[in-house]
Length: 163
Image (cartoon, rainbow, N blue to C red; front, top):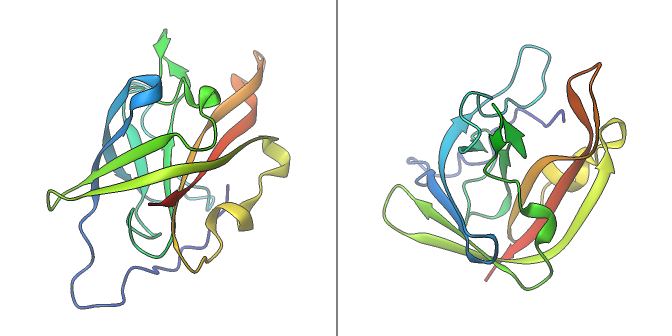
């Protein structure tokens, strides 16, 4: 995915507190959140494959709970184990997602819908485009696995709204 590198968080003298942990009770997920930026080619970084249990927050977008689409990315698997976002496909509308923030507050989101899309048709604007409300996007890999390329063919994207 190629998001805009424009920082939409800089609306005050002090940026909102970043996320530290994501919890999704339905799939028994509790993952630390690390900060991510952009790769040299303009795509979003992902958590290191050596740490598949971590989720990553795209720090050039909104902080979870702030107006706009906050984006968390995680692996479906890696290093022979399930990744933090392994169970995302099981989420359904209405499921809750909690994002704990560095100031001790929690932003609670409710799943609106989930999409599985081929990577070559990634919906960049739907994921990273401006919104009028606080929203959350969770992104992981899905679909078939291309052994020659060493990657999955699709992305699973969860769209959620702040409650």
